[in-house]
Structure formats: structure tokens, C-alpha cells
Image (tube, rainbow, N blue to C red; front, side):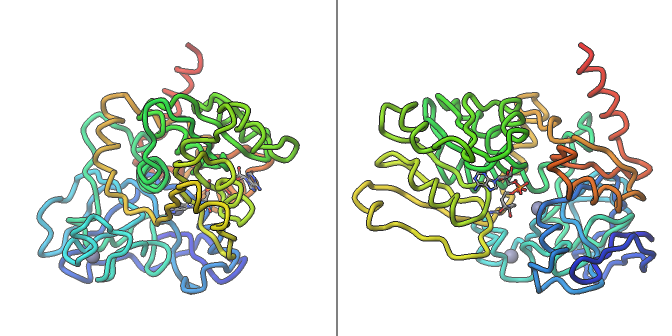
Length: 364
Ligand SMILES: NC(=O)c1ccc[n+]([C@@H]2O[C@H](COP(=O)([O-])OP(=O)(O)OC[C@H]3O[C@@H](n4cnc5c(N)ncnc54)[C@H](O)[C@@H]3O)[C@@H](O)[C@H]2O)c1
Ligand SMILES: [Zn+2]
Ligand SMILES: [Zn+2]
């Protein structure tokens, strides 16, 4: 089969590799119908994730069709359409039993395209299938559910739920990339009073408004703290989310918060950030961190099925799966291409229909 293979820092190829096969009885083999690329894949390509070794197939988000099942798999069968989560769960260890799948002690967690071969490929081996894939309800297209693999549950669990967004809240979100935008989208499930998006790129702030932000602040030329204080009568935001992953934006999120408020850090940090306890302790501020668990996939999938959550705006570009190399170029050049998520369509992908539907909606 063909797959996108990491060859060490800066090097990738669309290569012929061995077809995946069942290894453990809890495995399945899936034909990939629709896949996508994540900012984390770009980090791996830069060499920022040293545990990913050369020769690994990248990708941790996809929809596919079950081809073959291991001897102990009982909940899916060949022919079923399934969503693969970026996080796998053994279902049996202490953390998996608590729904904390990201911390799985038995070989689950974030493994696809990281520790084992991933999902930007024609086929994939999927471990712990009974606990790690989600059957797609009749009537939902690949693209409607694809972003449930990573960005939607990440922003919902680590941002909205950890920050306990409540009706009427002022929610400030620092960073309006796919993660910040998914936070804007899923925060609306809790009817906040106002969503404020903060980014240094005007194109990202335009996106934020399309996704439902009420106020946008470009912090390369405006003082974000001053603006948020003005908007909130001098108190600060009830919830501040960090969706970038650099010290400066974490520190900004802790300056935007009102006494008694919640700072939910979503960004992945490579460098230490300063926690100004000397200022925060007296203000009753809660700070949360987290790796996504994806326990919320079934809940978010029901919201998509009922039409209350529509992630279709994320899909800005579509490529044939065989053209994944160009898709990487487009995704990596988001400043010029305005790419949010690039959709990779295998021969059986329903995404061509999605593209048609998107055009029809745009025309209305
Ligand atoms: N916690 C988790 O489980 C989890 C899962 C997935 C991704 N993430 C992390 O979430 C973060 C965001 O991901 P993404 O894909 O949206 O990233 P992205 O790079 O596409 O977007 C980041 C945004 O931040 C903006 N930005 C950069 N510096 C800024 C600054 N100083 N002030 C304001 N805005 C600034 C950029 O313009 C961009 O729009 C990353 O750190 C990613 O690794 C975390
Ligand atoms: Zn990801
Ligand atoms: Zn486990």
C-alpha cells in the first residue's frame, strides 16, 4: 500500500510500504477513506517529537471501513464505517476505566503516527479496536465526523469542560488556529455571554468571527488585557483558554482572568512558562492543563447528528489521498493558503459529496 512516511527531520515521502496486518487479537485493519493533517504532524516533521522514529507512517485522524477483525473483537465487523480517535484506549487499565484514555498504561494513548504507524495511508492497523473506534451513524458523511478524531474533543474537553464554561460567561480564547476555533465552536454549547478571540493574524480572526466569536482582538497591535478589562467592567474574563502553546500566551491568559475565574491551558508547551503565583494566589484563580482523552466523541457525534454542532467550516481544502504530499505543502503554508484543515480523500471517501454540498450551501 501507499502511505505518508516520516524519514527524519524535514523529510517525508508518499511511499510503498507493507500492507498492515492483525498482530494482536484486539486489532482491526481498516481501509482509510478520509484522513487529515494536524499541526502536530508538522512538529514531528521538524524533529520536535524525538520518540517518533524514521520510517513511521504519520497521521492520527481518519474515517475508514473495517476490512478485517482480530479474534477477540466483538463490537465492529468488516464493512462497518468507523472513526478512529487520535487516542487509543486499552479499556482495562486504571486510567482507561476513569475515562482518562490519554494516560492509558497498557499501550494506548496517543500512539497513531507517533509510536506506531498512523492513518495517512491507504490502510491501517488499529489496536484496541473495541475501545478505540466509533461506529458512524447512518446519514453522517466522513467529513462531518472527521474532526471528532482530535480537534473537537481536544478543545471541548481540555478547554470548555476543564474551564467549566457556563451560561453568560465571558470566554477569552488566545489563539485562533484549528484548536482555538474548535474552542469557539464548542464553547457555544454552553451559551456564553460573549466569546473574545485573540490572535496576531487578521485572517485567523476573520475565521474566529465565522466560527462565532463576538469580539476579536489583534494582540500584535492592540493591548488584549486592556480590551478585555474594558469589555468586562474591569473584572476580566470568566474563562480564559490558551490555544497556542508558547509562554507569552499562557501568561497573557492568566492576566485576562477575573478573580475566581478559570484558565484552561490547551496548548502544547515546549518551553517553561512563568506561573505568576505571586499575583494569582490572592485572586482565587484556577489553572487547568490536559492532554485530550476523546471520551466526549460519542456526545459530540450526537450533537453533529442532530444538527446542533456543525464542524464543516474546518474543511478548507480537499486532496486525493494519493496527493498527500501537496496537501502537506498547503497545510504547512497556512499563512498564505488560509488552510484550516486539509481533507485527504481516498477512492471511497464521501468527501466529494461534502464538497458538492458545501458549494450548494454557499450558493444559497
Ligand atoms: N492539549 C492537547 O491535547 C492538544 C491537542 C492538540 C493540539 N494541542 C495544541 O494546541 C495548540 C494550538 O493548535 P493549532 O493546531 O490550533 O495551532 P496553530 O499553530 O494552527 O494555531 C495557533 C494560532 O496561534 C496564533 N498565535 C501565535 N502566537 C501568538 C501570540 N503570541 N498571541 C496570539 N496568537 C498567537 C497563530 O497566529 C495561530 O492562529 C498547539 O500548541 C497544539 O500543539 C493540544
Ligand atoms: Zn492532532
Ligand atoms: Zn488503558
